[in-house]
Amino acid sequence: MNESLQQLSRRKMLQTIAAAWLATTISCPKTTRARAPFHFCLNTSTINGRKLGVLNAIEIAAAAGYDGVEVWMQDVRALMNSGQGPSTIREKAQDLDIRIVSAITFPRWIVDDELERQKAMEELRQELAIMAEMGCPLMAAPPVGATTGHLINLYQAAERYRCLLDLCQEYQVIPQLEIWGFSANLHSLGEALFIAAQSGHPRASILADVYHLYRGGSFFDSLKYIPAEALHLFHMNDYPVSPSAKQLKDSDRVLPGEGIAPWKLMIEQLRAKEKPITLSLELFRQDLWEQPPLLVAQKGLQAMKSVVDAA
Image (spheres, rainbow, N blue to C red):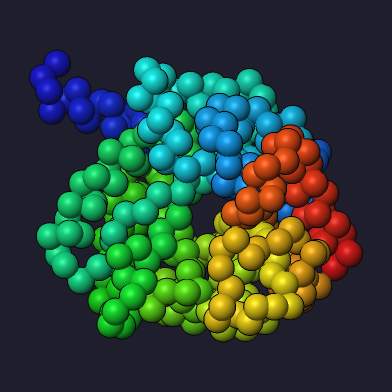
């Protein structure tokens, strides 16, 4: 078999693996531990202050009772640098009956510099192959490289997002437009809705976050405008009374229910989608990182379920 055929064969294999996991993760996740229609996920940033490693983080999430995990590609690469492949992550998740739901990575897909975008897409192609092999159907697509400076034309942003969607579709991975409330670009739900719609792509999706919606001045009631088919994952956290929205930092996020976020409104908007949606806990708090990771994971899951049950 020549080199081009080997590459084609490998890509087909990765697509088959990813497609199977995409179907089970998005459409048919476990229901025994979840409050329908929600499924509960742990973003490993919440417990990763001690640099646990991706395999240990997956074990902790499973032990705490989560349905899935969001992994960071920097942690996946650290595992690979130790000599273990992405299949190790897939096998670990299968053994523990937990899903690899999404990957956090930072491709510069939205920037104006065409050469920079091309380089980013080539680098991302390598990561997409890794995601497919470890059985990860979703990835975050934040506005990296465009958080400061001038505003990018939304029509151009939509064209660039469509290119990103086309590339990711080769590996059966969905890139979710991630709103960053502090960013000059893609800081609001309105911008994300426009870019997704204008991309004209059937797999266009939006990744919203309680903290970032508030930080960027979006209206929580506007969650109703996200089509059900464009919403797979929602980042859960909360924000305090002070500081003000414009002064908030990542480290100010608190557990769901410990702040002032309008949970009843948000949960009602998400329930109205009438589809399984994964709720993922994402925090960056030093005080949590200093506590036993399993305890933090358990507290986080209980906090998530409490606000869902109370809504």
